[in-house]
Length: 628
Image 1: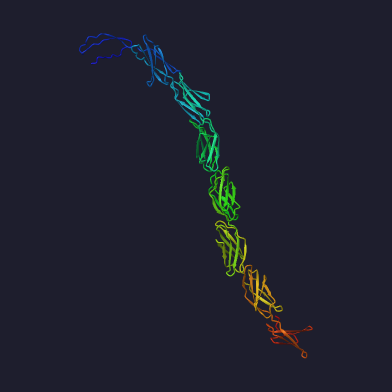
Image 2: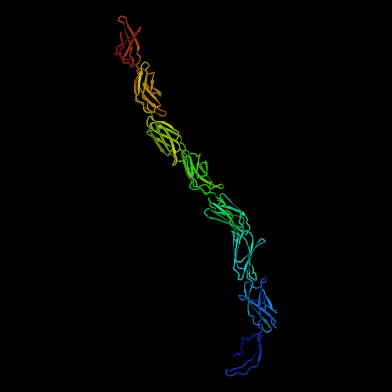
């Protein structure tokens, strides 16, 4: 059986008489001894709370009661965090309030026996917290945009922007603010407070931010022969580091970063023009980019492509052409022979002519470009031969037995083909083509004069013809050879028709006893004098030129005049008036004629081969032979 009991609902500060009676649910016992009990004191009345905004403290006050030793004021926030103050007076201060809280305030007291119940709760708001801010600083436009949560009961807001010992105050009724015209490179701080009818809130603070200034005096120095560029600039206020961007015409970028005032951009492509810009950065943001600086690639124009070479054979000039380079301002063509002969040409277009090339040489042709600062590497070489040289030391030999003409010359240094052309006066032509240094021609027509040239040619060019060399073929055999003897002088006159191809003629007369006589003439006649009498000679004619002789003409025979009669004796018969003439037989004579002259009177007689002749007076018979 529980021997205790709790009585609730008693009034505070009241004396109660208490007794106990027993019961068996049928009867009750008599009451026990009466005792008097005083309930706890009533809580303080007229509790009030006021807020000290500046000190962020709560002043709690109440009505006092006699015989009360002490009072305790208690405030509890929304999260049941408790703050209190105690006093023997009728007021006390609660310190260190938390901003932006709705506090429940109660007061109790202690009479040295027990504490009172808490007073009826009242409510009090603490000082508003500073606005919860969100800020965005646009480094490029130097505009600060701030927004915050509006505070309940806030009538307006004040924002104070501080930098470099300067303050700018902005009052605003809305929970946002935009501040422009801020200076780059300055350390800024911002304090925002809200205003209510009674209090100013705690401050919300954003401290130490700045936008770096745009880098200036940006310079780019290219290094010919290397694929990088050195970029430098002047240090900008507020910058901790820098970023450099090189952008080509297609928008492709190369980047480098540095905490110094220079940076090297690598892997630049040839034949590209880059716009280089520098931006400064810190822990907050990046500045605008510097003004673009045009810089050409380090390696200058790319090596040129599609180089073609053609030789103008007649003048031995090489024409070079290639694909142009986007940023080249001029080009240099070059030809270099295997023995070191070098020729250059300059042009602003993509075609160039190389003059003064040596004939019959193999050249390596290249072309390079310049942008005014750097020279590109030379293009891939194109190997090409110039036109063949004129053929030198042409020598011809004519074999008159085989009627074969052989021409030889000194070959060129490079493998070539050769064309030999022999042109006669009547435009008939003989040709020969060979890879060697000699050629033979047959079937030359007799008595023709040929103009011969030798020309070297390659797969692309024909060289100049050699100097004309005139070659005569075998002269024709003289025809219609005739002879006549001048009996009185025993001289033979011979003649013939002109022989084609002959420059002069050789006439040969042979006779008994190894007799030989020759006559060389440029005419179509010749004479042989001083012949022996009564001899038979064989006569032939041969046409000649500077190289050879024709065959001999058909031989003809000619007999010289008879020898003079010898041992002539005359006897005269005075009676008959007849003179008898006697002589020895003379070689070659077929008949004889005797002539007698006296006082202008002539008598002749003719006789056969006899030893005497009767000379009669009178005229010579009309039938006598004429003097041969």
